[in-house]
Amino acid sequence: MCKVSFLPFFILQLNILVSYLKKEMQAYWKQNLKYLIILLIVWFTVSFGAGILFVDQLNVIKIGGFKLGFWFAQQGAIYTFVILILVYIKLMNKLDKKYGFHEEDNL
Image 1 (cartoon, rainbow, N blue to C red):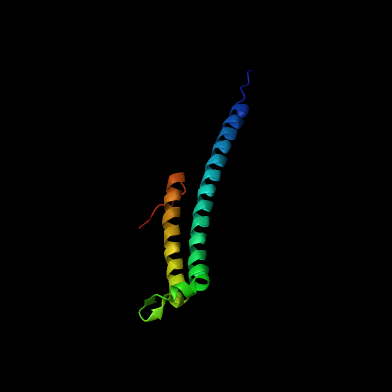
Image 2: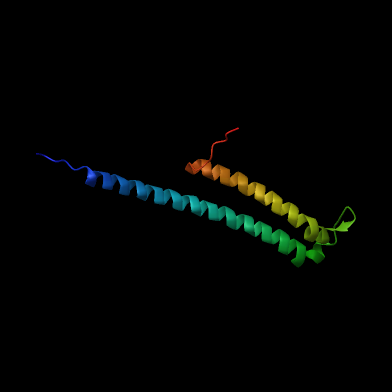
């Protein structure tokens, strides 16, 4: 009786697939970390920089009767944070679609 084993062929194909997926996942996470670093730098600059470090320079400008440095410390950092969340959602949805991780809308 002649036995043909497909197991070595299957294992080879599986190893090729795993290697490909590792490269895709590494590229995905590399891009994700790039987005995170950029958005965190913007968040830090606005919240710490505009609200604390550059407050004296910004207080020269007034918005609605309030000094701009005060406004950034109280309101601007919060608005910026919400905008950054929306930007991150948009970027990650685009990245998920690029790498095939997006979820279908069931509306």
